[in-house]
Length: 452
Figure (cartoon, helix red, strand yellow):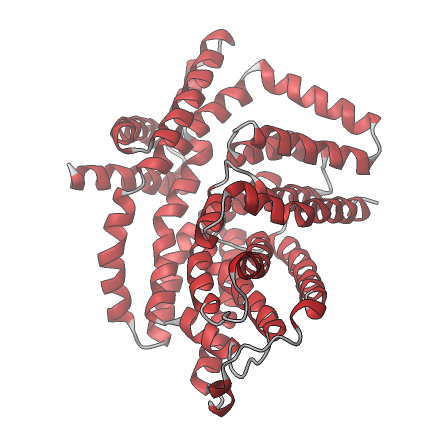
């Protein structure tokens, strides 16, 4: 059963990617059948929350299908909207494997902690480290960063220590999240809006650099004169090997983004498909460059089958969500939503309309609707309205979504961050609420300026 589950879980995303090139109806039917089997296999394995959300999406989707007299011909492509995300999750372990065998995370932390004497210096170095790692490691950067930098913080105790870690960890992770080519929400928005990934990421990187400096400077009066109490650091020589590895890692990020842009230009099938196509070859070439191809393949062989088998949660959620999105798009409900938003766009000033979208997105996620589903719907509905301003729309949706991963009790990211810090979710949200609201306002102002 284990092998069967892995084969089915891997087969339908693989066929979907292949069919992006050939576009054969027989493949669409095969994808639909395999996706149905994957849903059945996932039902008993998925955790309760994912099973419940999947059941709700499937029920509403089926209700729309029968009530709206939707043509049965669209069923063969009913699961398509989110299969790319599932395929992306299947190849994500490749990038994690190359970082693990290259020990880039360890080298980055050791280099950034070289001769750090005060908590203020550590705050700045840790923020940079978390930001860089978050771009490639995504949520996996959180526990690694907390452990690596947290053990140096001995001058603070109790809640003061937790708040210190919370500030540099959550905010730097959030900034990295907005420019990450391995974050599902970001990729869904980029594909749905047809935005230019290079322009969007460049703008977010500039915003992040400015805000990282502002955050670091704001902490100066609190931590500048608090020593780490680790005098042995002063005798340690410059970590040349760690510095070289850090530069390699940053160059790899740039090369990866440029490669994704090139493949997307050639295939013209979206950013997600471009990443799926390129990720394994890129990681393998990277392993050749660092002379560890054998270790890379061994790591993939040991990690990937387990990762594929553990896809039950995501299959249950994203396949049912894809079905729901397809049925909404084929029903009169989409026209109703589109009419509502178009009327508001023409009636309200641009800045007020952007704030309205932000508020609507926040309200729906706080009601428990999955952020990825909302982003897919909002992108498809708003893309015609923002014609000519696709980059601004992508910045709005990504920028508004970032604080939601920090202060939403339904967010996996929020719960992981709270768990790592060993605080209640409500406490973690309270610590980051002010930052989240300021960031939302800033993003709306930037989008307004881009649309002038």
